[in-house]
Length: 268
Image (tube, rainbow, N blue to C red; front, side):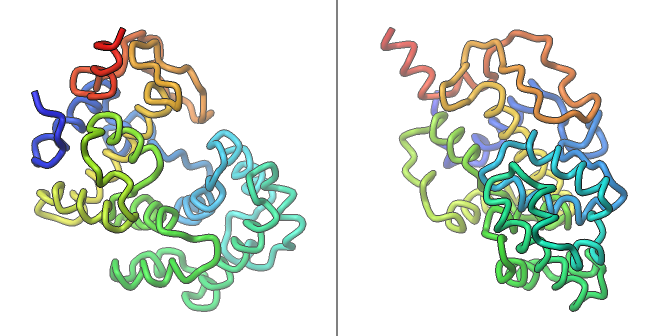
């Protein structure tokens, strides 16, 4: 059995094993969308959430989003004219809340000025042009940019986050590219997975794969792994129906192919 992730079959195999364990997490087949939405302004809400979640647990972000929604700030015009101090108070205790507040206002002002307040018009731009534009805005780095493009805009961009690197490093530690620069690793994974005939299908695959990786790392592949289970019962979203599989006690579905797990067992 090989743990190398060079062949296409191996990345697909990881995806299949995760999907078989968790079931669909994102898209029409999922009981609830993996990215929870609480307002009627889904695209703007995803942009706000992608900025707020930087170095912040999702539970904190979700509570902040609900406060912003309650205060009427999940609308471009309202967010663009918000008082930075008031906004910072609403998103606290998100990390760097005093910096994220003016950053969100600047993003909203850009959408208001360049696209007459239409988030859809911004996100409908060609993929590479949109990526360049988003990266020029405050508080938007590569990961945040690609999260916005994938989940809010439906662009076929594979998101590389710390969970992605951690899971692949543990499954195949002999690979040396998992700590490669962000775009190098992103492009390498996209080249392996680009089998869908249409961009929309590819974007759906990337979103589902990213959701599966994150779920595995929240449940099993933690900083201190819980390979043999039970999964961590962390409730990171209050959206109803999100975690219907947590009554199970199985271990991580990737144990059979995880080199780190096999090495740990052999050293006992």
